[in-house]
Amino acid sequence: MAEGEEVRAVALQCPHCGADVPPVGEQIVCQYCGSALVLVRRPGPGGQGDRPIVVNGMRLKPFSCRDDGGTGLEVFRMLTPVGWEFRGGVTWSLDNPGMPATVAFALWNPNGAEAFEVFPNINFVWNSNPLGMLLSPTGHKSFGMEMRAPMGAPQMLREIALPRYRGQMPGLQVIREEHLPDLPRQLGASAQAQTDGAKVRIQYDWGGHRLEEEVCGVVEVFTMPTTSLFGGGGPTVWLADFLFSFRAYAGRLDATADLFRQVGRSLKLNPHWRAAVEQITTQLCQGQIRHIRQIGQMGQQYAQTMSDIRESRLDDWYANQAVMDGIMEDVSQTIRGVDAYYDPYKEQEVELPGGYGHAWTNDLGEYIVTDNPNFNPNLESNLSWQEMPQQ
Image (cartoon, rainbow, N blue to C red; front, side):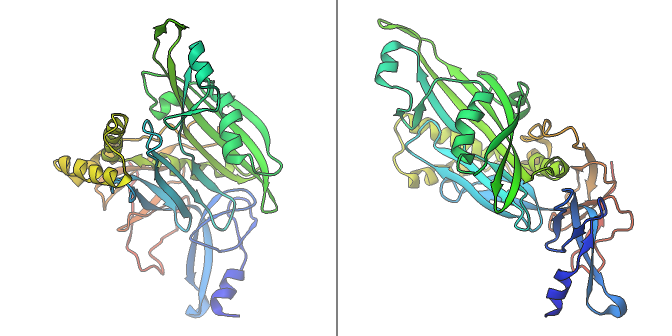
């Protein structure tokens, strides 16, 4: 057996619960209690080989998602656990001019069951006018929007989100449902809409294990009243949006909430991309764009017209704006808050998971937080780590 394989076979102990932890990856989740752990490799006795140890904490790195198939702009940036994998991005559909671009992605731990997922928004239209209902019954599509009567967020999650995104999972069971009327406000939903929010906790079988997942979402309803010879009532456009979930092995979801919360809070949407999509949506609705290639051209033109907004100003906006700050507030009562630290590389204050007391950063933009005062990532590292003073 190779030396590296011998190291991987060594069982370490979780400092939180004492369970055996295999040293796989830089960011580890204890598969017994769900605690987030950081792997460190130290020289063995006599300088021979590596001696891995784990400490309670998180190691996060910056990630940027770009709209390569459309505008060419950055869509969002976020902090992701080191070693986790990402899949997804932006999908463009000209068949739906009212919502031509949707963002959906999954971020998951390849060495466990933990995952953070954002689902695509869904837009609907409904006409309570008797003739409108006759001509466009439930399930019919109009300009890419599905005909369906508006509903509250709990019903939307049960009847739309879960069947579409988790309906194929064996042993699916809803174990808890919670109405969250303040969630739309926390996530920045439109003030011109009637809104509602909710979350459901589910369990299902996957890969021989029982998983637990919390799915959250918002409903936004826009009504345009009109009258006609066939009776009152006009078209209602409504959205199932801000759909996201996080999962872990059954019974360990709450313990992993710290890690999910930091990932969710760190997601920042690029205002340039959002404005470009709004402009493209307007022109699509006016029938002026026919091909996705033209969308890319328009995105580039828009970026050029906004060249006065320099990258430094965009960095400031990212630092001060928190699109997802409220996204994890209602995840679990066991979640800790955040602590502020000074990042000497960025020369600005950053918020990291609270309660750890010690934080480090390097010139790659990675962060490590830990409650171990003796931890020093510079030992046996080719990166330059600096400890961050707590503000």
